[in-house]
Image 1 (spheres, rainbow, N blue to C red):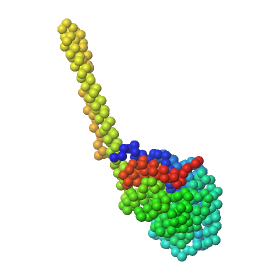
Image 2 (cartoon, rainbow, N blue to C red; image 1 turned 135 degrees about the vertical axis):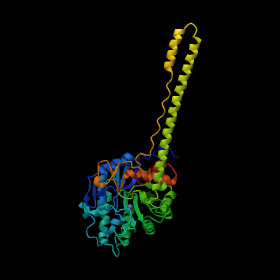
Image 3 (cartoon, rainbow, N blue to C red; image 1 turned 180 degrees about the vertical axis):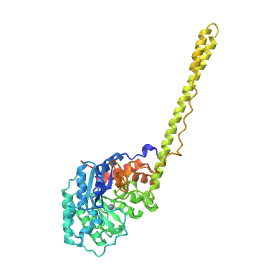
Image 4 (tube, rainbow, N blue to C red; image 1 turned 30 degrees about the horizontal axis):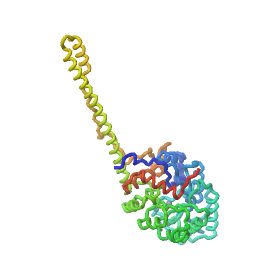
Length: 443
Ligand SMILES: [Zn+2]
């Protein structure tokens, strides 16, 4: 068993991928205000958990801009990316009803939420959308301006962008392909380049092909590397990405099934980064990965019980020693009394009295530990922070169903459980990989 001291994730760490620009962290859900802005609480819970540097993802013009504002609010803690997510890429099509930048003040609009992790089968798939090339040229030029003029100590990566064929209802395949290729060519043309924050869902072949088109068959023109975040693909796909020098981002979506967990097991720690991708992708009890959290808690409880038993045993031995010393002293007194019995009767009596007073008391019976029968059943995986429904929001509590950075320790624990290594090892590897690609983090 790994000692508890090694189970900690309280290392100075940075974790990729949190959508803090999502209005949900300001208390707004689908355009309606449900509770006060608690972004500061979200950041402070992350720091308390040991997650001291956050990479906030921009996935549209608006969210990239908002992310940058957040970075300026939390200098040295929050860093950002800028790019156009495949699910936000319909701005490249002629049917898009407004200019890409018009949504600047529309933060009450429900569609300003970052795209969720899973597909939405209720939405119809878009088809037949073409690309508006004139509009595209303006978008790419605006994106270039945004990236090149943003403070370099805050905006540290290009993305998130890529392909998502699970969610073609947000944007057709044709437009997604255009959006990804156009942004890749912009990323390749920047001098210096930025590391890439990439999204690939059910689109591996096209994804790799377009990357190679922009950066060469071995991505030899990719100067700063990149991460393919929220990975849910096969091991063959992971290996191909790793062989191209890319890193794999693991979050709650990467542990949904036995197959997912097997893929995680086979990815080298030296090529892995950890993320929550909040407010999405939380680990749920129905997910395969959950059982590693249960195992972690069991190991922790056992270790705590073992520690308690050890202390009790030490206490018992200490009492026994005192008892033995007292007995020895009493016997010594008895001996002396017997030697002095002649002629010093009075004194002996006095000593005898003293001796009787010094008789050690019988040790009190040790209190039995309380039975757990009547105690309230604890959750098999307790939350570090209080969790409440958004309707019952309170300061300092997490919101049920809204994933946030402080749950990153769960990701580290599950990876450690799957791989049979310590959490510390996982955290240190992820931190090193993150610094290699996105660092150094200057204030
Ligand atoms: Zn993504």
